[in-house]
Length: 217
Image 1 (tube, one colour):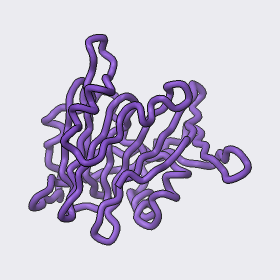
Image 2: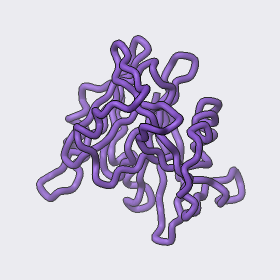
Image 3: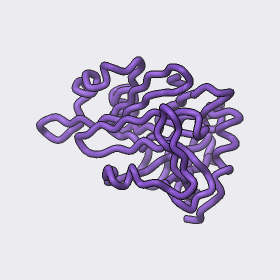
Image 4: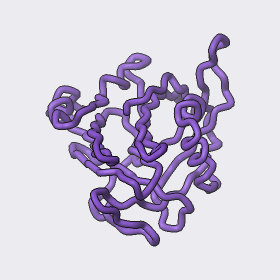
């Protein structure tokens, strides 16, 4: 997949994140989670802000081997959507906050004024929480499992009880008979963070359907 400039997604997200996410999938894909060492690694040029974690540099890849469909107003599905994969990259030309995941673990992060974008790892069983105030937002990504190794919606409801808002596994996973996945993205607009959730489903043939987009914060 060719690496493209970060502005391909950064500018549209800054202008109208809802409209962009209703037609395009932007995913921070981490199939095996992340180690604490990987997460805390400092990239060249990244800054440490007062009251917030440091952002990382990132790159964007256009995933051209899939079909992305999105809902039209009256005419069913359109097929000219795009998928972009975001990943931390010390040589990347964009800067954003990243919130990773790990099996049976919880990660949290404070996002502030040192970047205008926030990317959360793709969720296909995890839950997300947030609390906002004084220009910063505390965000959390929890993967809490039961005795059988499946994520436990009730346990994550409890583990995220300290957050003002919660976006739980069952809020997206039950779509299309349990096939729902979700991306969560933050955009800082006029000094305030907006957080958006996108629900997608996929088929074996490489088609991704954008089922819905909603603003969480």
